[in-house]
Length: 145
Image 1 (cartoon, rainbow, N blue to C red):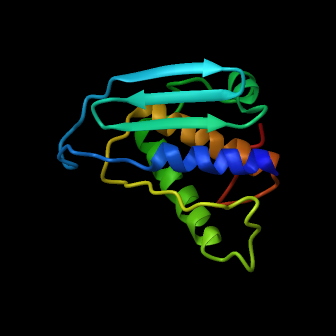
Image 2: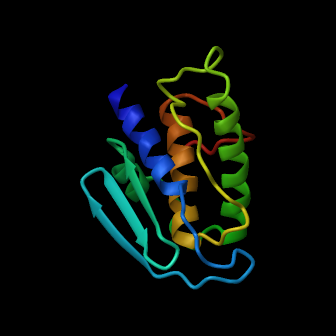
Image 3: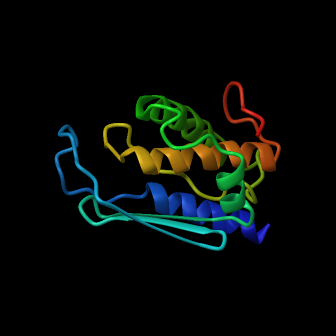
């Protein structure tokens, strides 16, 4: 269960953003990606955010089971992430109904911010991994991979 806490902390760090740019403009992102063991880190100095996903098995799952980058459009990933994160946040707000071990933090994901393809790709795939690995169904059909 400590791993779940790290996952949630990581997802929150992914989505928590201090953005000093105009949200309606198209933002060119310069992402720095580092991966070590089961930790994936994405940093964007222009948007002032950092994404860290820590979950044993996620990196292996991502490399072996996830569809390759470019399979989905960024628009598709953004729409799915919005649905998954909305349901995640609804569950976070209902601790009497959903385990705090799984939904420990609210995720701040602003659909008006262009996070770029890589961030949306990793969040989407983490949500698929999370749903399959922890037997949760956040929204709609969950691909089994």
